[in-house]
Length: 410
Image (cartoon, rainbow, N blue to C red; front, side, top):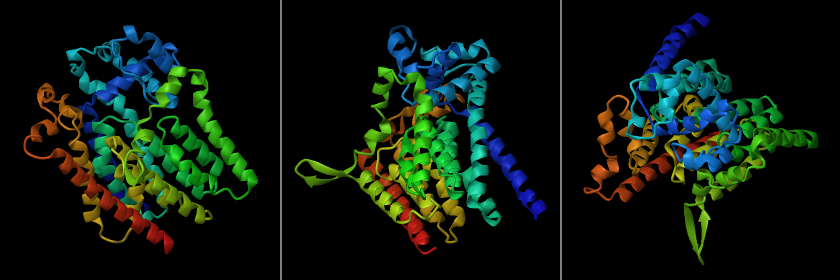
């Protein structure tokens, strides 16, 4: 049986790695340069990047602010320090060049490969954790084919150069820990994840609900505080940090879409859905498989908010498990989900969601306008984008409802 497994596993992993290496090399999004620009100060002993930027912005080559929690900075700073050793002085010259030449460099392929290699490692680790999570060797091939070859993760991680795969790793690991009745460890991981990007905070109540007694409840809460507090220690007294975190994109956007109820009031759709999930989760608090809660919480951010494309990485591991476990032929639903996702994103007025990311292959890609600029004279782009977002929402809700129904009959 082991030999049979290796017959498909080795070529699958080799193909996945080679594909990712190509995507590492050939695509560039300026976000990776922006947050690596800030991360370079970590190797000089700067722990409070927020105050450092506020105090030095007038003579920094870039006026961008660092908008992520502190553990993201420590993680990226570690990558930056190692990358600097590998790539040499040219790397830092490029990071600090914010003129017209800052989007091009003769060594761009090398920069992209070295900076994205940690994401590839995390991606492979996540595939391994998903195998542990699903716990059924017969489903491993279906699971890994989905995870390693779906275009959404390739786009979000390697084309847009985003590090959300790290939080996805934390959330999947926490899901495994909850299934193994290790609630404090799961809560600590989610707390640490929230210090990279804030969305794991939304998953913490589901873990805390599973506490069997007061002692476990207390330990789980303490572990949560530890996960949140430890990365905060260097910036606790930073007013610049507190201001930056108050501007969270996620927290602002999940309150935007609402149902008008009169009197100037509206019901935030995401908050209504999340409250329902909290209630349903509390009603099944003896169940340790939190897949429905984790998938619903993360996927509905895409369905009911003006999302950033990389946020799709939050729900993808859970969708991979659902895909592998479901015996029905649901590929049209997943295809509709992907089409809705991509075209909702492509119709954002941003050159670097589509054409600009090819600039490392050909500098002339920087001269190609955003898709919205090309199509705006031919269609009502707001209506078209809303139509694709509707497709995304309808297919996503179908999968969520089906998942809860299946768990209700398990």
